[in-house]
Length: 302
Picture 1: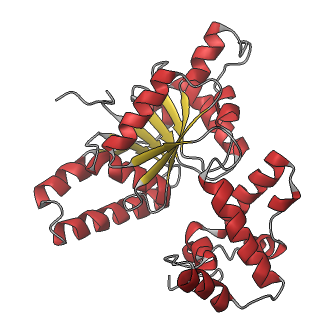
Picture 2 (picture 1 turned 135 degrees about the horizontal axis):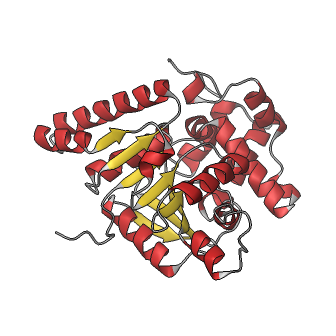
């Protein structure tokens, strides 16, 4: 059966929570072979252990058959470098929210992978236009036909955490992104079992331009002593019917990620309303990053 997205394989860069989740839905839902790369062997081991746990859970719940789980697991192959991704139909980057890091990765992807490979970023706030520009080789004009072709295959494909559970993917075109790239990325996200929304390439896109200022304001309420941690979260849970309060949500997202996105909003707009909370900055300085580090606004068993 022909696949609507036409992708015979994908590559995922980063085996953390997001990268592993993307690899999971690609293999389990979209049934596409996945080449997974991360420089950290420990991170790869943790990621694969999580994938096995998720598959086992779905088998025990009767959602999938054991044979289906084995076939999905066999679709994921660990590779030891970007060169191994050369012929994938799409490469999805899922590393930290750091523009310089992403530009370095996309420069390498642009030079190494097939000219036909779509280059997708799972960024939750950084400009896709800037990332796309980094794929244009040195000495090639970004406005030339050759330069535009390099950048036209870059797209924002923002999955949400935890990827196997959250139903949304936010699709973001840069100024250079082609219509064909957008169509393929959308079809792939749908094959992964996701609903798709689209945002223009503005700081934070739709999702985090709304969410992060909300979380930042909650942290400022705590910082100023307006209310306690528990009362802030209880107000939103019981008064607005949110499934969890903003401080707990920040812990689940990762306080370093929250800060990086808030800084992107502040720097990208120059608007003081986006200034990150000092308390948030200090907690990140202390490496109290939330659930993943064992301590944030709440404490967690490791």
